[in-house]
Image (cartoon, rainbow, N blue to C red; front, side, top):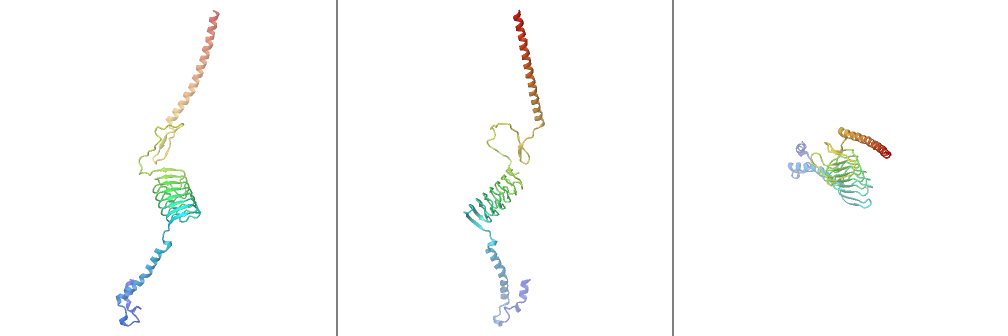
Amino acid sequence: MTTLSIRNSTNRWSLRCGLPRKQQLPRTQAVLTIRGLLLIPPVLALAWLALSPAAQAVCREGCDTDNNDTFLGDDALLNNTDGFGNTAIGFNALESNTTANFNTATGYSALEKNTSGHDNTALGHQALAASTGSSNLALGSGAGASLTTGSNNVDIANPGVAGESGQIRIGTAGKQTAAFLQGVYGSSIAGPVKTVVVNASGRLGTAALAASAQSKRASSALSAAAGRRLLATVKRLQQENERQGKEIRTLRAQN
């Protein structure tokens, strides 16, 4: 619509008015010129945005010798102020970190949202990306990606669960179908011991004492009590035998 409007008003446009007819631009050339003029502002605006620092990620590479921090990647450790002893490698790694100490983030968006959580280790794409807790360990792509405020978690090839703390999660449901742990089979340990079981979600624990086991324990306790009574009876009979033996020996001596 705009092009049509310009084309219809070409005879009245300033590019043609006020000039001798021989010097007036041909109608087609005038339209092209006007179109070119209209395109200049958007092109300049796009060029400005492309060159503007605010529109570009900040590729960082270096060391903060005051805080002993190391960073490499676009916006890696970008907002750090007083955080000490941090290592950020990868796009947006530890981007939000401000005052937290001793974090290691390697991978795209690893520990991206952490601000003050300390002593975290995240290795992998978006490992611990949303976590703000402390002392978490995540290994693998997306490991610990679901963690939020929890601390002291270990997530290996597992996204974890939002808000939980002190949990160990290894493997991904539907991907790993068998587990092997060396150094267990054939190794005896001192008691008391309990049977280890696993539920459908993969959680490990010790088995609750079954009713049959309880009855066995009860019967064992009764047998022990009966054994004590039997021992007392044996001792009483031994004493009776000794008394009778003395009487027999006395009678023989008299004869």
